[in-house]
Image (cartoon, rainbow, N blue to C red; front, side, top):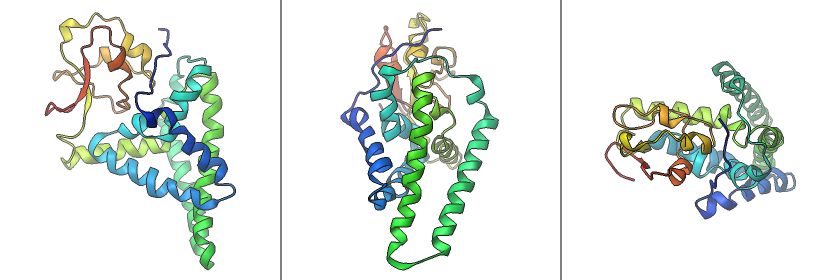
Length: 242
């Protein structure tokens, strides 16, 4: 099935949010405190939002996601993402490696407390983390598909974990908005929703009895909604709110 390079930037932030990635990754090399945006805005933000609405952050707020969809998509080969990179073993291994490396670096900073430079050292940890992600994910985006990194991104894994937590404790019952088909009988199985999906999912094959797409990797980006020729897709909760 051929992948289509459809527009994915439906808001100003999704179109230009990638600038924050560049500012942190490169500007942070000179002003280390810029890295503090990552734990106190990005990580905290995605954990809170995922409790209520799954991987919404990935598709609508993530600065790296903006880079992939707004800039790199136009240059990408946009090929099928290898199944090996979607493997749970790979996802778990990357997450564990991330946790160990980040935890070790944070421990070293706080165990060698030296006063006023603490914030700079702490911020620099996340500056280099952002830079590494940028250097690894960009080739993947260009030579495979824009959202290749998102298949095993540690932040995506955190969102899935917090999303499940939100479901288990019941706080996301009415707030977790999912891709929903208004009428299955009107679907013509054109596969357009799959062809334009940044995560290369196949919604038309997986709608449940309540007409919702339960795949935890859906980033709720509205790309399929905006490209459905029958206009029968929407993003809403079971309560019915868009």
